[in-house]
Image (cartoon, rainbow, N blue to C red):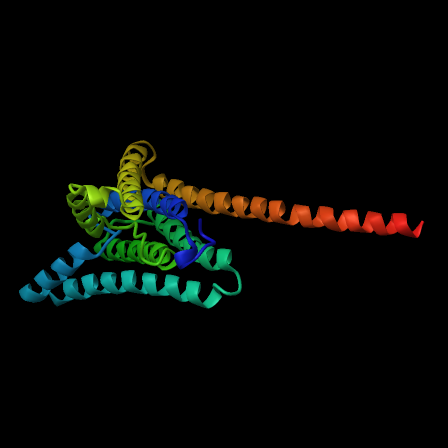
Length: 258
């Protein structure tokens, strides 16, 4: 799921990538809305707020919102930078490191809120910024390794694509195209996973409050571990016949010598 890059990915792998990461994005966004009253999985609304604050002359608020947008930008930059520079050396590691950074960011936010958070404006702004950076990393990673086919932290473009697809499916010739049907499956899986993640986070927060951040981190660790275990299994399967052949050759040589 994480180890393949760009056009070498199958539809199934993109659906796995999209649904699993969209679930965590939905969780993070709902948590940030509940705790900080701010969206952190996208920056569309923040651009509107930035324009409003500039128009009102609220330069401090404008600078804060602009900083949030930059953090999302740098998250995406960091993710793709890691992918393109490490991809030739170790594809899995290149794609796993951004997720690890995301986990660290969310752990910092969760730990700070649990032990030190005094609900000041400055603290809230910093926490929102760090979560935007984490979501920028995730969105940059999924877009980078899927050749922009998968973007999981915001649903504006996805909803637009779904509207276009459903309109195209009113004609029979479009309904017969496997590529369009596959795209529909991918988009729907992302949408439902995002919603499921948000609903899950909302219910969990009502029970364990700020500890929900640790649940998100644990979920991402499970995703990494699952993908790594599949990689190890595939390597074992591919290597096993080769080892058996070598053993057979050695035994044949020993028989001939005797």
